[in-house]
Image (tube, rainbow, N blue to C red):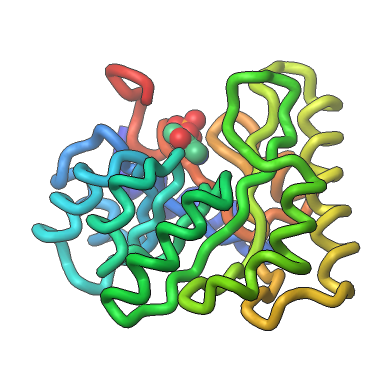
Length: 224
Ligand SMILES: *Cc1c(COP(=O)(O)O)cnc(C)c1O
């Protein structure tokens, strides 16, 4: 299996759709990222802050680093100087910390609110109600943050209808709220949904960012 061929295949599949590829390189070595980079890929997703910071220090500066996994507040300071987009804002507590650390490094950090759309209890994410409160009311208190969209992870199931329903629900909420009276630092543009197992459905349901790891880099030895 070749990483560069997989990148080319994905770009081909994404042509003419609204989605772009975030290559999820978590647990993979620097060389794997270098190969994807040589094939033209610039946006990479990681879920461990320390790992992302180490990779960012050693790899080309025009890489966009995306934080896709649950973010602990005590780790925010390490990614604030360089992160391009945080997909996984799942509490007001972490929003507040991102704002604080962004201010310290004189940045405005782009964030997505992670909405809990799956049936499983274990996944992180805000309810639709909490998401609406942040978009319309709470975000304005955090001026070093720009909320550029939403992220959602569907239930891990073979039931395509269920996955489609969850993605469609997120898209519907997104469209409805676009026209509402949102905080000045909110602009709903991105909808991050779809992984290796369900990206095709996500694209059909209007994803603008698919986060794909194993289909590009191969299976991970341990899952994070
Ligand atoms: C690991 C991960 C992905 C990529 O998963 P694959 O199934 O390997 O494509 C996408 N999103 C998040 C939040 C992840 O943690």
